[in-house]
Image 1 (spheres, rainbow, N blue to C red):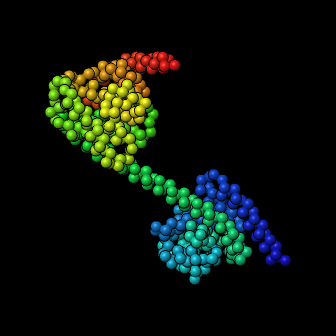
Image 2: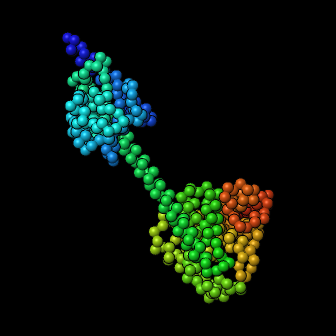
Length: 416
């Protein structure tokens, strides 16, 4: 009768533990809290005073404690390196194992920071025959042994706990892979930036008056993209497109860059061909950013269809192309040329406002105004314009922005 009563009590403990485990496994909480609840449930069902939940990793083979309860001297974390024979024994075990002096070395090594002799019972956590972790239980009240009824309860509960541990391991693996991919992408982007900066310098080497032009266009384009609220990846793409937008000029005769007068029609056609030549060059390269070839081809297109090489209108031009067009024109205006001196920053901005929205996207020009204003008041941590005096007051930039907004509003009212 006493045996039947004990078995019934053990069964009730097991059912109670299962009822507690269900919400614990389904709840959206940190795994550290879930593991604590799982261990408490199985210790209650097994009548254990001490217990630990270990997670298994295979490279190298190791058990590492996730949570522990009741042990007076348990390191945090506790770890136990495993030999292949230990992994095999734990994986092959058919259920919980009662440990004694002859079985410690079968399942555990003594090379970690916790003595295997602390544990009286081991329950491997397995899913589909794969080891995910181990429940290690210590002493029971009165140092009584774990009997078959306790072992059955432990085995039942461990099947649920194993699933939770396995799912956690999968989540951790996915998170680790994502983090590794992000680190790889960051390193690749850093490599691309460095390599493309070198290309940009090489592109501009033909003409002393445009040295640094491609680097500046990349910087201006990235700054405009930031002002327009673009994502970091889109800003990186803009910077790279700016570095490469004039790559076709490597095929243009050097003498055309230093001609002090206007180009004749044949010379202009040769110069204009740098857009299509550049497109051919970059189209053969697999970049992380898909918009670079079309940006190289269309950065001289204008909103009213007066640009080249394809006479496209504003609606046909992607946002990156529109941004590079404004950044390129702004740097061309504020740089010296053989046939004229540089315009001031204020004069260049006034011209761009005057030409928007007919030739340039108004939102892009507004983005440029925002960044130049930040330079003017010193709020840009890294100034967008380097080596050139921003000789325009913030109030004058505000006036230009208001003028541009009025032009856009008036144009919309006229169209409706």
